[in-house]
Length: 367
Image 1 (spheres, rainbow, N blue to C red):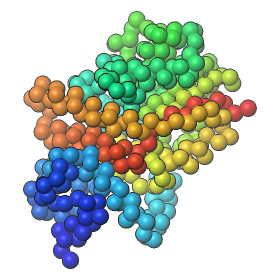
Image 2: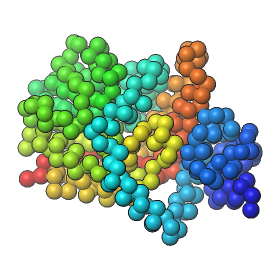
Image 3: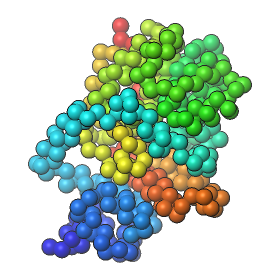
Image 4: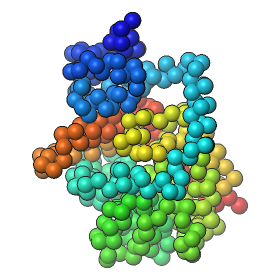
């Protein structure tokens, strides 16, 4: 069977056609894509799109269909061997070691800051919003921030630590609306500089530091800790260390809110294109892995899934970015535009497929 025929047979399981007429079909411009897909799978799919080897009008639907079909293929006996090998590699290599942890900051968060200014809300919140009908992106993000603050039962004077604080939007909101004293750590030089320059009127202190450096900072214990969209960079090898360090930074009667993307089943696999070009070292936990990590360290107060809100958030980000593209086009390449489109709309498809979850856990230190 030729490479195009074999690939088309696999695609038929997802009800996806090459050079078809439906919005989620692939329009192939370079037939070399077929053999590349056979050899390199998802990495070839992403790189081929960025090069312009193929196009698709409805990327989220295409990716959602391919992911659901791939889950059927992964049920074969050889998959268990691949999973075992990947887990062994994770434990041996630990792609999220302390000296590697700043790489994702350089690769992803420290790119041209106009990209994030163009696509995010006014507070630059780079995590899932919580939507109601008729919301703007700014309104949906503020709803999420207030939900977090209420879950944490913030009070004036509380010391709040934000682990992976982004551009400081959550800390600023908590200071303005709940009277807390904010403390944040980030592995991004640009995020650190932004907070330092834009939140000088608020009681916020920020440091460039990995979470494993917290014990050396000699800070008094915090009343509350929050970590939104950072746990994806911790990895299964390090989650025990992560949870113990944060518990030891928290008052015995304190609260910790953890928000993370998760995968609906346990897998050691990660999307190779996302790994190489967007989030190096990123790993998504399954429910059992996340539960195992907090067991014996925290008391679980609540666990909620907001995954259905993430597709809408990603689509809103893409809509804003594409609207601002004419202002960015002079200094950013067409390849960047296609990469960013594949990233945002592909991730929207991941959540549409049901494989992607978005969890908020509220935790207390174990007695």
